[in-house]
Image 1: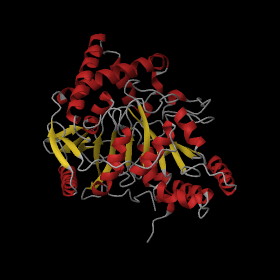
Image 2: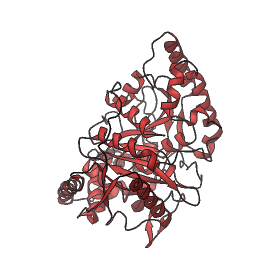
Image 3: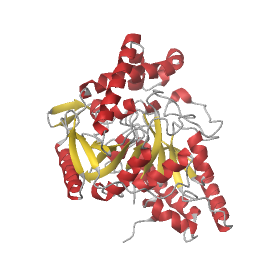
Image 4: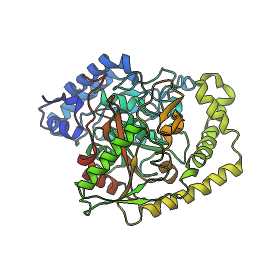
Length: 458
């Protein structure tokens, strides 16, 4: 039985819209029905733009009927993380701190999506100010995982991931400062792309840590991620994917990155490696010498930069933050200048080591998360060698590539015995986000398990 159209990749739906076998209005109504059915359970949206989306859909249908088809995003409903400006709509950042804010104009990435004919169906929930990885500290309540609403959808772009799996939108725009696209993509079983730093403008996005922040697409397939990425960078008419030289060579960083995994995540990842090996991929062990320094380097950069941006609000209305986020921001005020500068040096060392691991290879491969989605409210999670704090576990395998700026993508690679998704992360070379997408699209059939319907998506 065919899956409903709002639960399929854009690449499968867009041709139907172009040929007028499916109207944009019908597609939007299907997503709005899914929101009405499931948002009460999943809390994926902060703002639903039902009337606006239907009006955009009718306009799109009229343009397409008149022969003015703009491309494969024309008439496609997408959601926007509520950290990104959408003209005339509040950008809450999931915080009481920003009550009364209304965006004066679209962020550049949103303006390009609008030009491509995309329909904005709403603004999604997130961890307050993107300063967390579970999406549970939000002024609007926690977002929930469609596969098990008692579990986190990951964060900070948790509402975006939940919305896609539940059929509330066909794609979303998220942000990633330490893994905030890839973590929820893995936790919910979708594709999440963090492009190379600087590929996509962060203007019109509430900053967290400006030297670590990235914007990127969250989708059902690598092909859809490519489509969204190209539109958002202003290259919507780029040609077909280029073939990757065979056999692809992938570096496998075992030390640190595979040391502390949930048993079932390890099983799913090793099965993925076996499938890739059977498909002819060359897997070569590599080492990131200073991997043990990743967490302190990341913390000293991110905490200091976040505290600087939030200093005025921390001084005037600290009570408007959720307590956990406020405490982390206050910690940033105790990072010394020498600590920050030492972290910047460590960052340069780590980038050089990742570059060396990638030399002569197409990419690196590692799990996206060492654990499946944790229960909401959990402070620690079990892991092979004991237990670990939830925050450090969820950031452990993603934050390095925000420090180094390398492009990285998460692809679903199996499930646990409880049906919780696992993610496989592929990391590309600097300056080669498109090559990473070529590689990921070639490997996807050997990696991916499809983003399915779940507790929120029928």
